[in-house]
Image 1 (tube, rainbow, N blue to C red):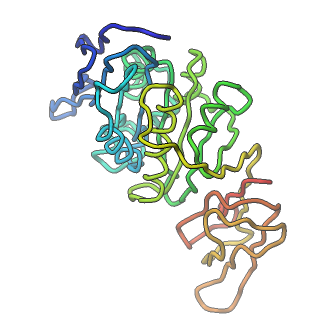
Image 2 (cartoon, rainbow, N blue to C red):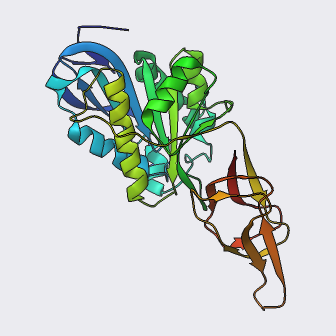
Image 3 (tube, rainbow, N blue to C red):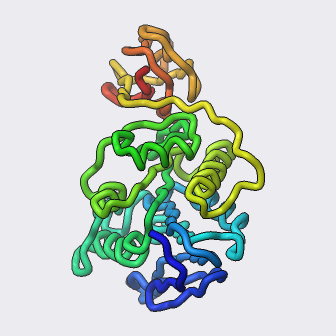
Length: 317
């Protein structure tokens, strides 16, 4: 989808070669304080793809906010072919409250494509689809693990779609995971519109992870180079990526205090010790072993576990 004209979002026209920040009205708080969706549009001098970057759909997942800030700092409108539309804080309500959810306790990423007359979550999802997604040719949505977990930097995407697979490979995350669609997710809604979309998962909620942020910034710049939107200053280094088509959580067989023995990215063999579960009194100890051979791509950060809790997430290899 090539173009050589200005772009209009929420009634505001951004001319080629310009960068502009917009505030799209969303709703009012009970105090009547207005809440808006902040959008930064960088419109290139030349025609090209239209890529959106979004973060903080879950308001407590803040690594993506910093990733987008750093990417925007590197992009010069006059060197850009196409358009970059950045929405660093989609769930402004949750971001302010340091919460995953919206004030109505709905999960925004289960509310797409939304409705103009629905719940607050549904209205925000509809606004995002109408003003952002519908104008784009590609998208990257940035996430972290939910509290109290942490994730190895990874891309989740439909690897059985050839365009999306190539898109995912170029990003260069340590792992790319084939992931089925979740009903109501942004990824599902964008895919139904025929838009290739990547979901980047890295780090944990309410924490900056410098490595996860750097991998995210580098990955987006690689993608923009691949799409011929913005050339890299130097050739991108080769990145070792593991392709994953099945994952499995190892779960606690009993309640207690979990002592983790592996790190993110470690390869573990079937029956290898992953940690032990003890009680607070030194009277019992239970070993937790890998059910399959794989790579640790996530684990709990909370040592207090209940029977059945997921403690280590394995990418099966």
